Image 1 (tube, each protein chain N blue to C red):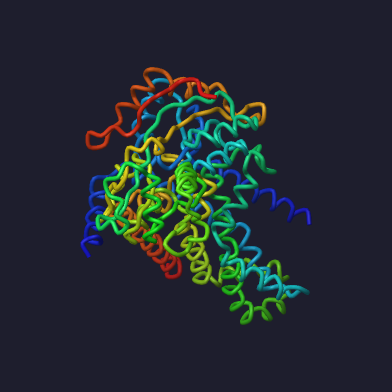
Image 2: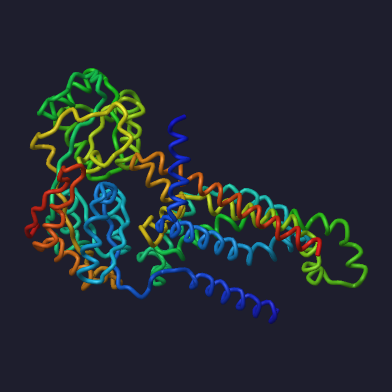
Length: 232
Length: 278
């Protein structure tokens, strides 16, 4: 019990002292994970919506694969991205290994299946309800997608938050491709792993509490923004 | 079809802009150094690297892993310099043409750490091989790094000298954890087990619970650190000028004094002994 109380006091003293290192890693964590979600969304929004709207041979197989990929092991994704971005790998000339860019790529790969599947589910509802009406009106399936996406606001928000949750909590992949370099690629989760290694358990748990508080804050902010948009 | 292609191009441009917006500190010259958890987690780098950066303006980015993985990162050309502690594998690395300009930099030593209760009765000994024998005989729990790090390799050599076959004992009293020094110490403190640690990590480790040093001071526990440049002939991306400056500084009298001046609770952790290596 004293361990946990200790961690709470460590967390508060870090925040109250405006610890510069803490703010740096919090900002880096947010930038990397939000960018990863944005990159994944660029892929997942159209693909997820298309999977809801179009019927084609092999659609079931694609859906099964995307659902399975939601459980991609981060450490495997990290290893594959590492081998791709390594100087000895096919994309080595980009020089991205051990940079935040590499971490964004790894997290985007982890996030994309989750957002794709949840977007597909979110759009399936309105499509079942209004799809026929839209097609009767002469709207093509492609043109119906933006309207359907607009109708599935809450579902899309859940998809994005689930993707963000996966990214911000993940440590296995970014540890491998980022290298946990102090001041460059050290994020909340890799810092927690490092402090645990040093046996500095109160600091590790304190950082963990800040990370959870941060996730709650983001989620709350997203819901408030979304509800404002619904009732102007 | 054309509009789809155009949209794909727009999206890829957007993605590139997003990636570029991330901070990469491109302005400061930097090198990447693959090193070991012992140098990073003992706090040595936090003391040493700012002094080098102040002197030269070169930022040093450290990827702290086990010696085996650090050499692998170097072999693939993903760092400029490796700074590790396993002389045998370092010499092989140079002989294989992956590393050049190897220098020995400093040493510290390994210590056998164990629970106060000392079930194998090895306490206060000075012969590490005898102690390993007793642990095996008593089947007392022993936590191994098992991660091909410098410490792991040193530990395996000691078991060999003690003529104990740890492969067959693995899973019983011998616990191969495949983890870094800190996690291995965490495991040992939770299991009341023996563990071989480098002194630096042990001194800075904060979750000791019932653990204390059992055996130290044996000549076979000597732990030499070496530094070398990745061979630029193998990888064009190696920043050889910057990397050489770092190595030269480490073995210079200023670098050596900075290493010697790092202490925890008044105890010196690393002892400089630079001289041309291989």
